Amino acid sequence: MTVERYRCGRAPLRWATQLFQNGELWLASNTMIVRERGGRPEWVPTRFIPAV
Image: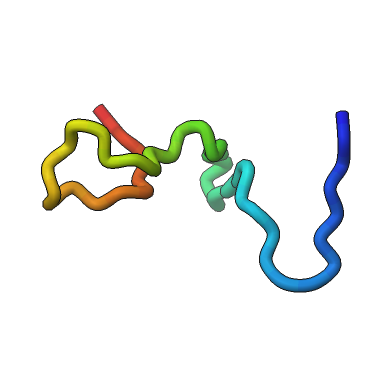
């Protein structure tokens, strides 16, 4: 496993976590984010996390 270090500027987002006061923990990785339009209509914005 290689660790990349970013001393200045923005680093690429690979994953994120958020802990809420009620103890709920949310996790998301960059593999969940839709970055390409594919067959989706123009009104659907890119870079989103799909939900059912």
